[in-house]
Length: 270
Ligand code: 13P
Ligand code: ZN
Image (cartoon, rainbow, N blue to C red; front, side):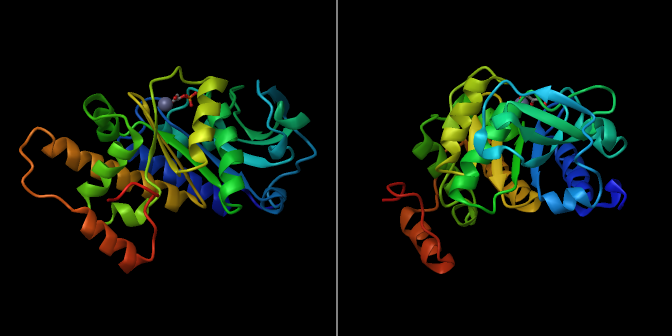
């Protein structure tokens, strides 16, 4: 059997968690990451018929029964993932209509998956309905997006339009815009359900005064989405207190739609 630490999904997960930490998006245990794995790639590295233990999830997600996920552990520091992946990460397979998860590898100190497991699993289910290729859900605490939720209108159209106006290529990267949730208690099924609902119409969901969720077909795409939105928020935070004498106009955003063959969210441009 192949060494699990040399599997490409493991290498990419460790690299991504490390990059996220180095970006300052994941202080202490901040943030969490989950990736849907193919049964075949799991079987190349471990025997799924021999679970280490079973962990209750506290929710139901029948559409995810039998699916495998590589997930960061609760209370674990992204900083440490590269040094001890077997403690900070775990591979689980959902069973019993998603009510329980068999731990197949990892969380070797007796830990378990992130407290945001409901938001991750419910978001996977929601994104898979929109795009069968979706594999990754990423949550982190990037400073500028967070800062923006204290000083900008939280209306989704207004928030999206501001981000699009901050960098020319934002509208190309996330033409569907970003959805925004008000402050809610994290780690609950309620915020999980609300996030998943928002994931039906966008791959980026801002959690006001907390952070952001991103979804994508792989780790690179998802990282790039958050990176682009965070860059736009950074520019906004640099200029928000200054008189704005120039902007990217809606006519210019329409030109980008044509040039890149994308469609901006219906009703978001004049
Ligand atoms: P976990 O350590 O449980 O993953 O929580 C971190 C976090 O960012 C909660 O929103
Ligand atoms: Zn968080």
